[in-house]
Image 1 (cartoon, helix red, strand yellow):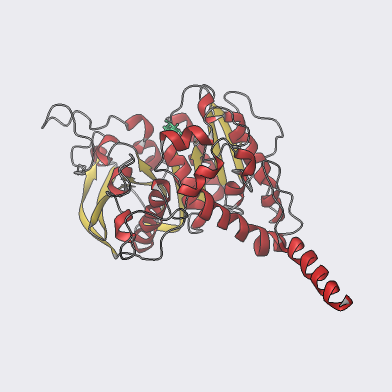
Image 2: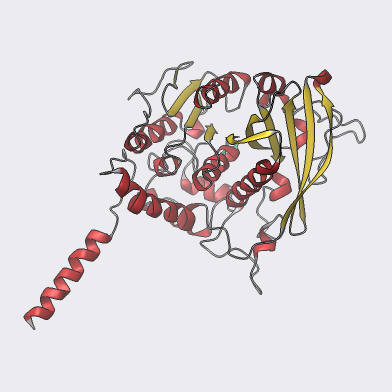
Amino acid sequence: MKRFYTLILIFAVTSVLAQPMKYGAEPLHIASKKVWNKQVRPAVMSFFQNEVYGKVPPVQPKVSFRLIGEGEAFGGKVWRREVEMTIGTSKALVLMYLPSERKGRVPAFVGMNFKGNHQIATDPEITISPNAPKGKELGSDPERGAAASRWPVEMICGAGYAVVTLYRGDIDPDFDDGFRNGIHPHFYAEGQTKPHADEWGTIGAWAWSLSRVMDYLEQDKDIDHKKVAVVGHSRLGKTALWAGAQDERFAIVISNDSGCGGAALSMRKHGETVEAINRNFPHWFCDNYNRYSGNEEALWIDQQGLIALIAPRPVYVASASLDDWADPEGEYLSALYASPVYELYGKRGLSTTTQPKIGEMDADGWVAYHLRKGAHDITAWDWERYIRFADRHFGR
Ligand code: GTR
């Protein structure tokens, strides 16, 4: 009998020890790289997959790519290429701009856009997606180039990079329709009508599609697919972080003003809260994420865990001074709290321990941060810094 109780005791103690500790919003001091890789990282990944963004369902549709056109743009300085991606019966248009004068393969920045590929530049040849919002005056394309300030194509291509983008609405329109439109239905098992509580929402699907774009880039003879940075602003910054966390082919990950559910720590409850984001955007995360609405303390780990999943690949977190809703300080702290994981790999994280001031940056290590002066946006000022960061890490 005594032996029986001893065995029970040993079992209880070992199962408690086997339970990974709860992290909350704190610096991730992990005992060793081995402990991180073997125990903690898989647990962090599974937390974000099951409780936050949701898992990609096991049923997978066929994905294929087709070149639909190419030609000169920007007065010949840039080469446009358009590729149609077919996912089940859904179509998404991938727009690429490459530097015309290129010697061999070029590195690339890949990210989704908000309102359609045709809004990123005035280029009249960009194919307008049937899913994109239409211009007010039919036929005059008034919306072409409306988001050009967010996509300084000439500057990026001038620095020797390709720009690769697709419209979020081609993958899943950004409203709650119970997942009837977009790509989700192609992943339903027989009889399934919506994702399970631990299966992906819209951000998960957007992130998955960025990995499919990466599949294409691996085949494109003009792209150096070992040097692809994934980038996104705001909800698409959350998407870039989640894509980069899951897919190690993204060599650099850039989060611009991603805020709640992105880089910002949720437990601070500063600006947008988990309750607000789940109420206003019930389709973004998996249903399990509702457990944390008004209950952030219950999160097993905060968003610094998402950034740590990217280690040891370089990550850049950026904020804007007037963007209180995205909690700039919470975005900074997340980057700071993920830094010890980078150090396990011998890579320097952030150098500062207090948030850089407006217009300043901490971008000499593998984890970078800046606070731009101004509103919630992505601007040429941000891009200049992303290019510099990529130049350094890509040895350019
Ligand atoms: C806001 C939302 C944020 C952020 C932003 C955006 O309405 O509350 O989480 O993602 O939209 O995407 O611009």
